[in-house]
Length: 275
Image 1: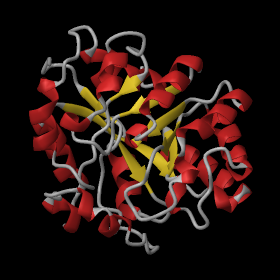
Image 2 (image 1 turned 30 degrees about the vertical axis):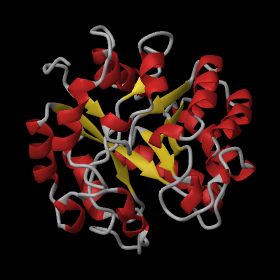
Image 3 (image 1 turned 90 degrees about the horizontal axis):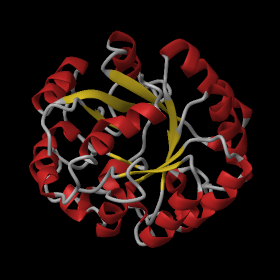
Image 4 (image 1 turned 90 degrees about the vertical axis):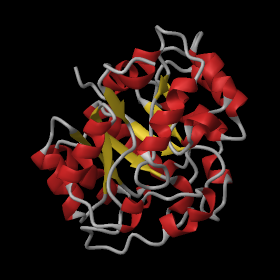
């Protein structure tokens, strides 16, 4: 694994509790059972500068951070350090046109470079192909930004059907220009997900939420072959994984030499239009 790439991490940030004017719920409490050693920062009060120091320690040049409506910490971070901290606007498609207008405002005001949501924890939950999501997909195409959506059985005790990767088939057919990035590895439907990645040019896969030693082996095989341009690195700091653990395990991945730059940087830079 090269150490001079300038990694782009597509899921890093701050605990959702801090800087928000809204109650973010107990999502991260619900997933603690999945992680033996939650980062201390998950319960702390971080600053953008502390996050940048952490990124520098591990060679992360840029990070895509969730920006939740009303979260002043996250908004100030992307405004103050736009060359390092990139905003992924967290929205709820249940909001209809209000969600679309919120995305437009975040794009203009904060310079966000992506949209995101987790179908299973919406209220009510919305399947990936739910027509309530379609106005947001259309706005992402109009703004030429990707959408990051969780796929697979969720960690929180919430219905998994809404995150079945097969649901993206209809979305990709209806929005061929949409850049859609699966988060959280899509288990246990990895083989199906790979078939869909092969089928649709603008469908991508992020490794977020999983320690490298637990990346699905089928994804590594795919990345080393026809999926070289489709697999994108995503961490999960500080939500469940320490960067020290991630970067200790990454070198053990059996990736080909020519795949590392694509996995750690180039694919994300292309999807996020970072130049």
